[in-house]
Length: 542
Image (cartoon, rainbow, N blue to C red; front, side, top):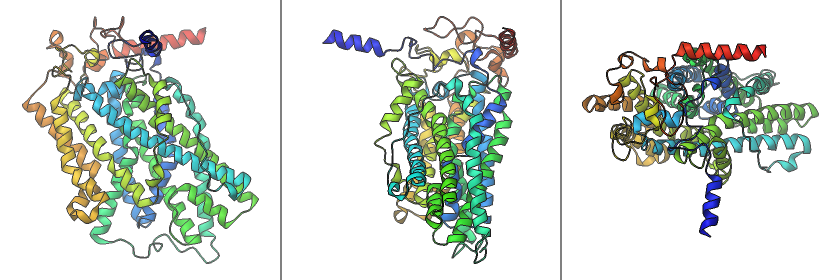
């Protein structure tokens, strides 16, 4: 029996696993660094045209804001998202490692696994939510084909696996989903403007429009919700920016794309929701499947059924693609970091598909307010983590030693202690979490908490990021840590911003312990780009 168990164990151990790492955790090899600004911009544009982002924008109308009152939170939130995404992409773009390895300098090579696991848990919930979205779209598709007897049927959705390095092939195909959402916008606004009783206008749809300080805090809460809906993607940035051809490719073009596409998508959904409410009355339908169902209920004609079918199919496709790079691949990277001997990214994708089945996300999506409350909740956790990482980045001037991220020796600079925990990172995260935790409690039991606690919740991400960053900076100034290993102490690269980036974080002669070769053995960025360009040229000639 023991022999059988050992044989089975050997079968599941990855051949590439060594020294608590596997090929998915190692730095991206030069030949795989082929993403350009176009790929990143396409990725974010595709992520903006998604059911979740549509629901966020339209939910603002459902909770009491008028169309004009949503302008400020959408623009401010989208601008902050663009800046945050560019800043967090710099880690992977310069050092070619994913999130699980990139936070090891901040929390320790072992301590980082707690935060990797935390992100994985968030990914499980979001994976289940996206699958629920896809199931609702399949409901609409089957209603359009077979009639209303399929109205309450939630079919199982497909498991989609996509190798990370080939993910960019999905981007050109994302035009279909943009057409679907834009068609929904044109259809809804046309119905609103052509109402036989006359268009009621956008600002009178709320019986008692919010004003005064209540309006200010509602806008602040909406900004937090805008940030919350993309907080996982901001945290995940290193998982995709590691494939950048050079750091500039993962720079400001994607930030501008985030601002423009997310603002545009939010306004499309907001205007569509208000137009349908103006035409048909009642409570605003804040999610797209209820909006499509409303159209079918009001007009069961062949052209309406065909239109809803095409839109639902496009949205279904967008949800499944979004689930790959927002949840499935990041979870695969997370579990590969926690159990590198047994899991790589593809195995992790299978795991999340299975363990997300018991999650019941429809309680979260019961109404617009519950949905926005959920969005704001986990930003308390992820925002504090992001602030610690940025504080570490400032202290080190963006300089990291990549081989030390995979070194579990007691004298490794990222071990910090015998157990591999950096107490500075944990203390900073905990301080930030404790300050904003009353706001989290107030979101779910407001009657038991003061108005001050409720307002803390409205600023969760905005408070947690700078607070944890400041705490991390101060603690490390009082208790400093080495920037480079002792054998490289005093190297001029550590004295200037991104000095180590010119070497890809690896000095000549360095290697990752347990592996025969490093991803890039101390070549400069310019030399690496020249080598890749030459390879591309030779392949073209061949």
